[in-house]
Length: 226
Image (cartoon, rainbow, N blue to C red; front, side, top):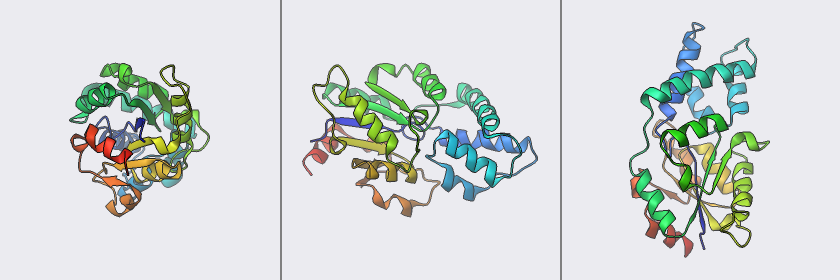
C-alpha cells in the first residue's frame, strides 16, 4: 500500500530545467564557450558535486568545481527571481494528496539553498513533511541513496508510527537519472518526462504521464493495489 509520495523538484514542481540550462549558457558565454546539447542528457538529475564535475570536465574549465557551482547558483537564483513558475496543477495535487492522508516529501539533487529559495518563494513548506537535498547523501542519482534516505526520514515523522518501506513510496520524476534512482531504491516511479531528453530512457518507470495535471489521488490509490 502506498503511504508516501516523494516529489523531485526541478522539472516536477517547478519549471526550472530550462532555467538551469540558461544559467549554464550564461556561465559558459562568460568564457567564450557554447553549450553542448549532448551534455544536457547527462547532467539532468545529477547532484551538485557530480554535475559540477561533469561541467568542468566537459568544457575543460580551469576553475575549481566549488567555484563553478557558486557562480552557477548565483546566476540561477537571479533568473529564478525573474522567471520561475510552478508547474501547472501542482497546488491542486499537493492539496488533494495531503487531504487524503498521504505523507509528502521533496527529494531534490539541488542544494538546500536553492530548495529553500523555491519553497519560500511559493510558500510550499507546509506541504512537505520531509525535505531532502542531494547534499545530504554521498552518492547522487542514479544511485538510490537520496530516496532511501528520504524514506528513512519519513518514517521518523511525528505523524508516523512506524518505518516507511521503499515499496510504500511513489516517486514523481522528470529525469532518466531520477527514474533509475527511484527504481533502484525499490519504489514505484511515475515519470513526467522532460521533453528535451531522450524519451527511450524513461522505459524503467512504472507509469509515464504527459504532465503533472494527469496525476490524481485515485491514480495513486490504484497503484497501491497493483
